[in-house]
Length: 314
Image (cartoon, rainbow, N blue to C red):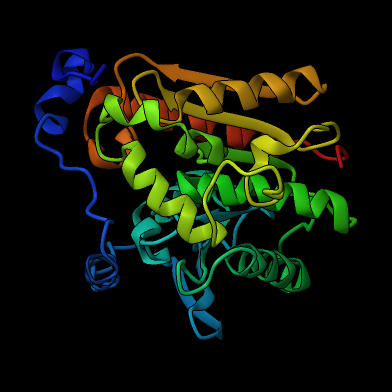
């Protein structure tokens, strides 16, 4: 059954009932959206906060925000959304400026290569390169390498979860936490054509099929999809960093997000699942001034602040 406007939270209804689904069905449309997102101007930074843009190569790099104080010794590495096919690190500037200012930490957003031109594992490789760069440069920037969290929204949330898995398996120093906003975790959702009828706000399952097919370079739902690409495929979730997962109950990823949170908890991982009634995809970014979105974001940052004060948990 289609998701109806009447199911939207009253605080979000006036905005989302007119929000179209992203037009990702044609490559020329995808490239047009990319150009628009990259052309956005950077929000005003608090006095003394510095900004750096560091390139790793074509399509990859990081954007770094450092508070005037230099930071409290912690950092957040954040990955933008866009269904693996659109988006840019700059679209998270406002969020990362706010986090850097409120938590007094260094925030770093990752510019990763996009599918279909660069399918898995290229985007995740770029994220891992950004993690290694931040680890290598942490002490010179006054950052404790063991007080760095990873996070992301939507596709970026899925990449952050996959990055946490890969770091767990390959590297010694682990993230202190995972901050996952409506993460895109399971390719099998896209393979389930019965979900198309829901026609979820902003990101529906037809767009999801486009994103996953582009990212995997093949049809989603097959038996050989790696867990680094689709973290919900991971069977053993033990030993992963504490996680905060936020989702709305009328968004496409609700079921997979809840299942992943339950899997983390069952594996002994400290996991906080926040479900917002009547909230569609990425509502904290689309309806940023709505009280429900403000509270959701504030609660997420309060959780992150608490995690970043914990030491010796890696």
